[in-house]
Image 1 (tube, helix red, strand yellow):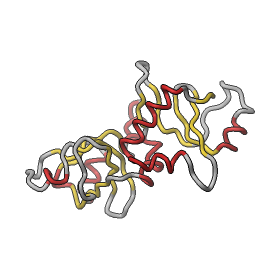
Image 2 (cartoon, one colour; image 1 turned 180 degrees about the horizontal axis):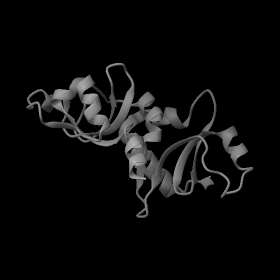
Image 3 (spheres, helix red, strand yellow; image 1 turned 30 degrees about the vertical axis):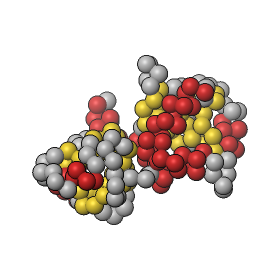
Image 4 (cartoon, one colour; image 1 turned 60 degrees about the vertical axis):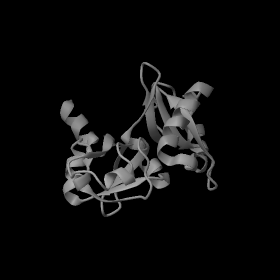
Length: 179
């Protein structure tokens, strides 16, 4: 486990900023406790500083995980968010989309969000920004990138894709079936 290099930190912050906007400062500089980002086995963890100090007592091979895994670096050194970061980005996200019950199941199966699935969405969602997808019961289901802005959505046909799925909670089940 180690601190992120400056280049790695820039990649992580850039990806998180796509979903939470200016709230990135609130994530990194919380008032209740000090939270830090650490790299362990190519995965970036978001954890309380006191938890990180305890984790340092374990060897590299014995330590499996600590804190919240935000994502991992690929072999090409790109940073990818994982579904485990959903709780963090859902709390601070700027743009949100709520889907109808029939759209929930389709989204959790890995499909994109089409206009007919949308119950409501935040105002002024631009094109190509990160959005968190919620059920009507305000349960975060996943996240993705908006394919259309709010203004464009008003004139779309019902089968037009509004949000491109990047990650959803059904991913856990799909990964288990691949094993």
